[in-house]
Length: 67
Image 1: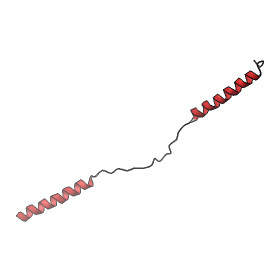
Image 2 (image 1 turned 60 degrees about the horizontal axis):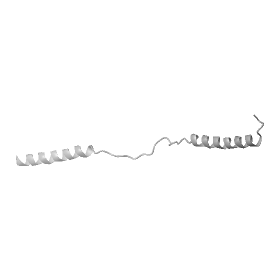
Image 3 (image 1 turned 180 degrees about the vertical axis):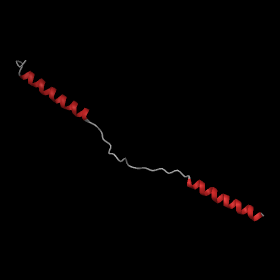
Image 4 (image 1 turned 90 degrees about the vertical axis):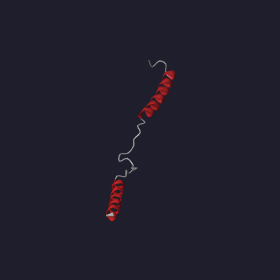
């Protein structure tokens, strides 16, 4: 009878460890499937406007009779 208790205890310990090891969480680091895009249109647009404004000021200064 004592052997049955020891055997049951061993078998239950093995079953418990198998169940606990099957539930271990995993952490995965993966690269995104879609590329990361950064939209810089605002900066480019502002730079173009500043350059055009300077050219217009120079044009008005050199030709005051245009308007």
